[in-house]
Length: 158
Ligand SMILES: Nc1ncnc2c1ncn2[C@@H]1O[C@H](COP(=O)(O)OP(=O)(O)O)[C@@H](O)[C@H]1O
Ligand SMILES: [Mg+2]
View 1 (tube, rainbow, N blue to C red):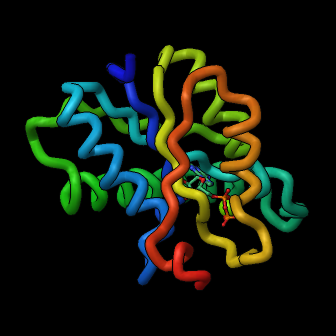
View 2 (cartoon, protein in one colour):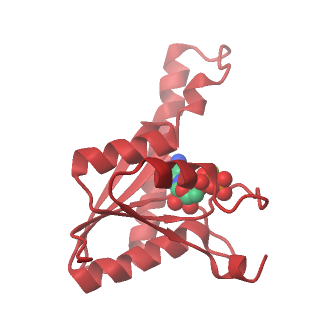
View 3 (cartoon, helix red, strand yellow):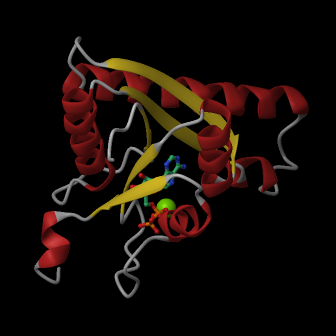
């Protein structure tokens, strides 16, 4: 029976006319309230930042950059909370650092989630693919069920 109690919603904060990750978040909120489930909203700070050739930054500046990225993520999560999450939802906000799909799957295991709700697309505009690469890897490797939320515009072939 479909009765999710812990739902993981990864977000890259993509938002636009087709709403992308926000659209998935809103569906996850609806499911959570219907099933009285707990929601985990997760953002992964890309590991690419720490792999960039940032040789021109000393350790102190690099740490400063990482702090700024974390601050920015916290700020964006707070904005999502204010805009979309009502007070009656049980929700926690998490930030991890690394490769997005890998950290999403780590969170799945650690928090023992029973459903992942993820948008088919994120920030990039690689429209020749049905799914973004993060979503594809999560679908292939997750051990729980995954709901891939399509944006309305995609159905119209846009
Ligand atoms: N860094 C990230 N942190 C959390 N979730 C992410 C991250 N990157 C992507 N996602 C999730 O995966 C969805 C699809 O993104 P992705 O597969 O990367 O597609 P695209 O190639 O369009 O960016 C996003 O809407 C978001 O829900
Ligand atoms: Mg992406």
